[in-house]
Length: 158
Ligand SMILES: CC(C)(COP(=O)(O)OP(=O)(O)OC[C@H]1O[C@@H](n2cnc3c(N)ncnc32)[C@H](O)[C@@H]1OP(=O)(O)O)[C@@H](O)C(=O)NCCC(=O)NCCS
Image (cartoon, rainbow, N blue to C red; front, side, top):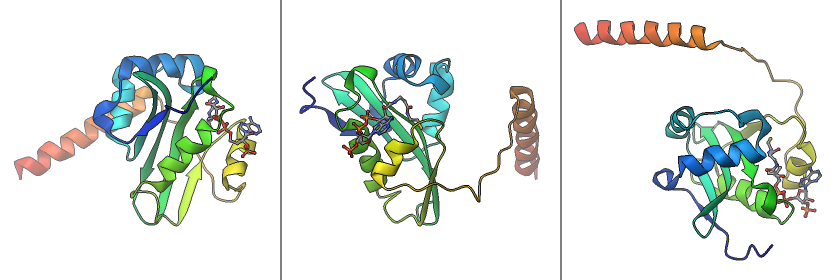
């Protein structure tokens, strides 16, 4: 595989959601059933968002949420299975980390089940001391959204 022409893009407007759904379905086990609509929401609320392109084909994706200075978390790092093992995953994560929203951040977190070695090659270290998790069902999320909406309309009413 010749990947010399692969380019990385940080413009959210360029994300092709149809291709992204297919990329996740093929190469990202945790995101294989996500819909384009839900991915759009995640992209809208993330910064930076990086896509990797071979011509007009989306072959990689990564995103982060960041406060720009203290903390950031990396999500959904994936390289198309045809393009893995060529150094593109490293470039993808380095492009994400080099973005102005990321490059001054004190602590960058990520969750990984089986790619620890890949991230260690890039400089990440194991961290067992700070992680906790709250799992919410869609119903709970809807209720929370409704409560927010009510608070918002109350605020507007005032
Ligand atoms: C994980 C992933 C993004 C890595 O991308 P990639 O393009 O294959 O990785 P690279 O070729 O850039 O590898 C960079 C370095 O990590 C090493 N590496 C990559 N995957 C590795 C693995 N599974 N185990 C050990 N080392 C690994 C490479 O050997 C290379 O080492 P080097 O610095 O000595 O050359 C890609 O394999 C992928 O998309 N996998 C499926 C989705 C996934 O699991 N994403 C991670 C979610 S947390």
